[in-house]
Length: 337
Image 1 (cartoon, rainbow, N blue to C red):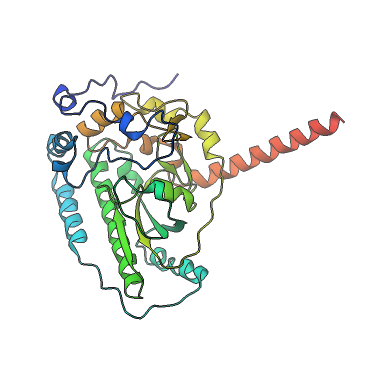
Image 2 (image 1 turned 180 degrees about the vertical axis):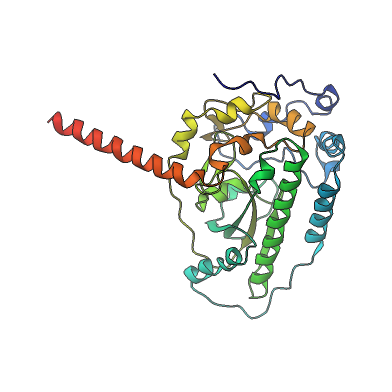
């Protein structure tokens, strides 16, 4: 039996739910749809005056009074995003695709981020109405401070979330300027506010990990304890490779995040969303609790993969189990001949 959840039962604040538009959330996200299409914005709109859920998003901003550290992180974010991008140089730097991709490692070595990757841009990743003429997506990952993350849904966790988004935005600006100064157009895309594209699909495509039951990526090293940013560009990068670690199967057997989720938003089964069957968090159940806390983050904090040092050990354990299973199947097949 799972331990008693201290955050249950949860009853949404009627003031917040009254601000949510009808036929929103899951339906706008494309739950149950069989056709592949571009996503719509359902939260984190840059201009709350231009979206039907703007009043609800503004309520989220005012629900909890930010402490001094969170306030400072929010100020810092505005400062980062206010920096002008470099002009695109007239002289174009030429490198092989492999050299371009390898050169991204400089941003890991300097501590600006913990992982980089590259994926070919797919138009179904772009939000409806966004013009994305670029061919490549550079993905950047920054790791959480786990000691702060595990305090979720406390504001200590929310402050670290903001801090890591700032780190991600900072390195995205750096990478974009680095490319522009070498003659290649580049555009940063930073969270949490919605940019031109979704961030999770290209991160999956460039090999950052596998989608977890909680709707976030599980990385074999960082678990789900990381945040993303991206840079769109036409520079001729080589795409980084994907690899299966057995995480998807692990999630199908694990119920830790399910049991920890206060509003019961995490399903035991995959769902059909915009033409793809995948793990999906019930947005309509999730967002009220998310809005009443500092952005929650309980599911990624309790994920077994997020604990420092656990991921690599789990990968080895899954590999051993897979080899043992393959050997048993081979033996059974041989006996039946």
